[in-house]
Length: 335
Image (cartoon, rainbow, N blue to C red; front, side, top):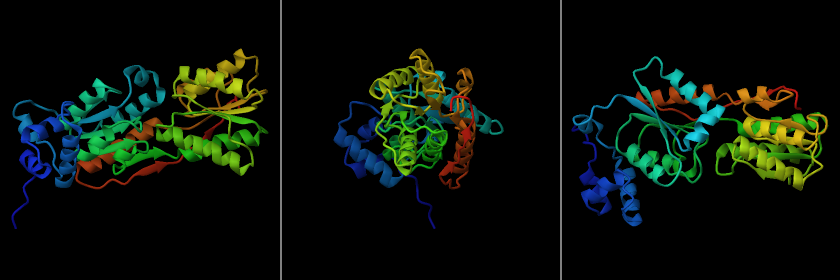
């Protein structure tokens, strides 16, 4: 039996009804290509299973075996977020005994996103791990289209929904945090939720809503932050103005929760006597509040290590099933 040859640029061009040069420009994320042509080429790439020829490229440019860790965020956000940093440590640890080199690839919007897409389409890496994906990112969609072995940390956006992922049970985590506030007697419970364009933000909010619904309490005291300290500070101020009678707050990240505790103190409210606070992540930030933050575990290092294990399975030609890890409450003094 004759082995089926891999599809070429010419095959993609014939299937999509455009020139070879146009296909090449789409593969390299050239922004000058018309949207109709780009869509036709993307469909042909998916139908044919086309992938850039890395072997041919390596005759010109020597490329080490590598895994791209793709973070669609600004460098300021990446290096200030302890959870992202712990995930990166987990990926690095998972690659220690392999020949694969971790390459960190950042880029959030505009020209950076186009540059990131062009790099991913160019066949520079053996596989990718994506973390901190947003619903409006094209990164997971591009990776799904080009067929590069990919694992997503966190439930991926719709465009990359076919990709395997590892996630934390964030609905359960939000529920645990809120149940803890209910157990200590809180009845006016608000939340500083995460961004709704991220699965973690959606799921932690859902857990909070479910716990309040089960207790027969309203769930209207919601303000959204961006998981950052400054975002948490602004959201807490807004929440306190709109709902001054709160006696408990679930905050969807430790960075935001530490800022919330600070804002409550500045407003003359005692934590936890007047307002109890539960954060999320069990990051080093949890130890910086006074009293120490009560929080929910988010083991970024384990998520990174598991994503790396799954990617190595894919690179070895085996399947990798999506995984959801459990979480638990970490006691502290704020609730």
